[in-house]
Image (cartoon, rainbow, N blue to C red; front, side, top):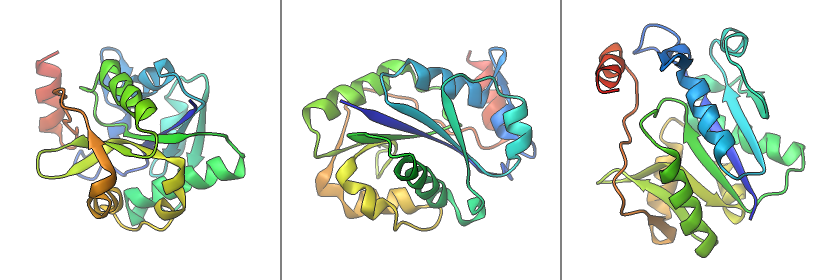
Length: 196
């Protein structure tokens, strides 16, 4: 089974007041931590979608097998980054069975959780494997290749969430506990650092 991984890291971190992707956690940036985990997942290709502060982020990020894609439309929301990533996969003719979409600002998620998602997807290849936020589904999520034409049509900042809501009957989620904390504000960052 071949997986393409899309790391969404294009946001301008307006609530953080600094470049969120470059915040340090255990000596590495938030984005480097996400890339490290992605490179441990058995996959075909890791793509990182950048937008705001792209040059600064690339300059301060060590990476190995990651393709950086620039989303010039990042101000149009997360959906535009998903679309940029999928268009890159199509342009490069990357062969994959599913796309694992994850965010650069969820450092509490461990490799074990991603591997459990992939394990479930390997048994249910026609289903979307999404994360359960209680009252809604969200990313990290694995989308079978058959969903890519529809993913290319999503718009706005809630595109993936709305897409998952509309396709609820085709979504499965894990029952295991996972900390889906997004680091959006200086307070979130301080709180997370304090529990490390």
